[in-house]
Image (tube, rainbow, N blue to C red):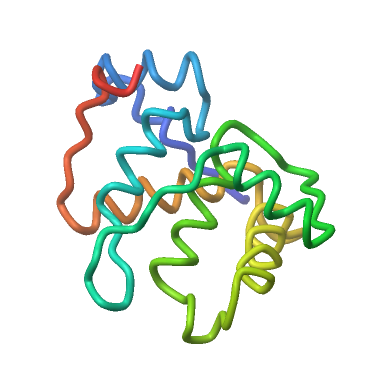
Length: 137
């Protein structure tokens, strides 16, 4: 028997603010959540990232011919910044490859549409970072 698990399996333990956030956005980034997440990211020189707007990310992807099948909320904005923070000028040499990375993460045929947000939640949990859910609504 295969059992699939979901955070909602722990319904009684989910904070009210998280429950409210999920009711509006599901397991995807809102603008506020994305801005908060990116504000915690640093580049390879330990400097804060300059956050691109949603429109700037859309333009960047379009310039490289990237069309997303799983384009939900601010997920692509989060993913490109995560790529800039962790991989740019390392295994990802430039913005073109960062754009392809966004496509590969969000449209991974072995993945699922909520992968960016679920990864973010796992990272916060692993690092002991608390999210003030009420501030994200």
